[in-house]
Length: 207
Image 1: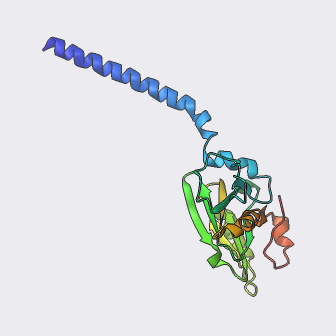
Image 2 (image 1 turned 90 degrees about the vertical axis):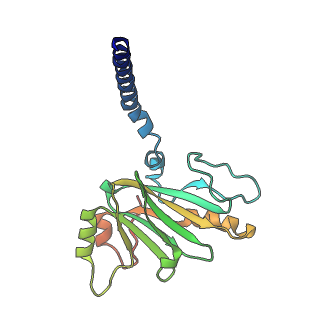
Image 3 (image 1 turned 90 degrees about the horizontal axis):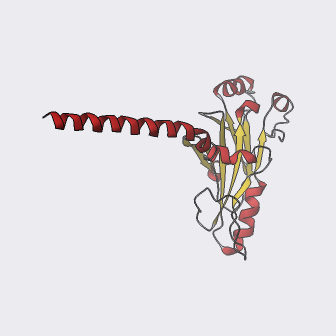
């Protein structure tokens, strides 16, 4: 029995040492891995007032995908992303609807938390506003009862994230229009000055 017990103790010690090494390696790898998640990769688009192209549908030549970290979508779907940091103010994504199907999906570090299609557009316009809880409460308090906002307001689980814009080209002849529709979407940050100076169009100022 004594040799068996020593083997069990030895195996347990080896297992504990290996577990400790794995834990240390995982902790040291966190900074590297955190820079490669979707939220971090999209931060280059924070300074843009339109989506950063992720995938452009082919219009004759094979498109070069600027960002290869996303799975390649349906070849008939043009994709762009807008990153946001709610510390700067609410994020407003505005799109004009047209003959092509368009969708917006808001993502945080844990994945998508809201999605909407052009079917929710009002008078041909779709305005998605992403806010913190405090910003949402403030926006409600500032609403005019006689002129209700047409914004689709969403409370984000995190202060940082991104919105994915997708436009479907049902026919080959619609592919240039799909790429253009993604770039025509407006991504802006609302500030208190912007809110005070709105003229009822629901638009904020650019970043």
